[in-house]
Length: 176
Image 1 (spheres, rainbow, N blue to C red):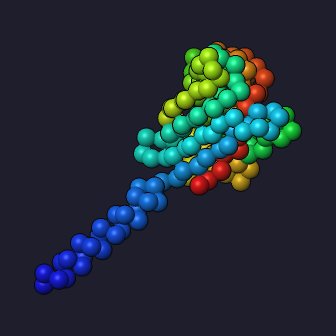
Image 2 (cartoon, rainbow, N blue to C red):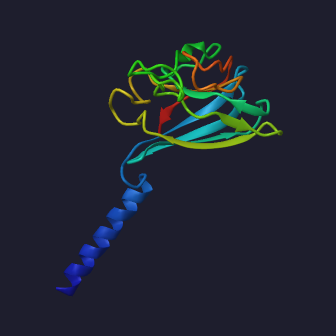
């Protein structure tokens, strides 16, 4: 009887190890290599989903002017030739742009990213307006999605892009 219990406990332990190595709860994860308009890698993003939503961790390693910049999920998983292929902000609910807009925000609206004096940034946020799972607000749908950093800060209210200016860095979001 004791051997059976030991085998059962070892089996449970192995199962827990497998679940942890696959991301814990079996929820989704994704990544994006961030590139500038010349195609140089300037950073990366890691996304993971749990019961609170999609957590986003962005590391910019070089190449962006210091200050605040708009950052958004865009509706298509294409970034060439000049990041316009990424389309508009992800907006499956047809909301208006911005956190301060009474009819907003878009699903793809995120808080501004702050780049420090040496051109680097670390950014972390969580949003419950998108998912990595199947469904209407999935970043991993048939045509994919992109993460785009803009030239200026987002004003959080002006439709349709928060006056955040030119797209200066982007990456295609890919499941991992």
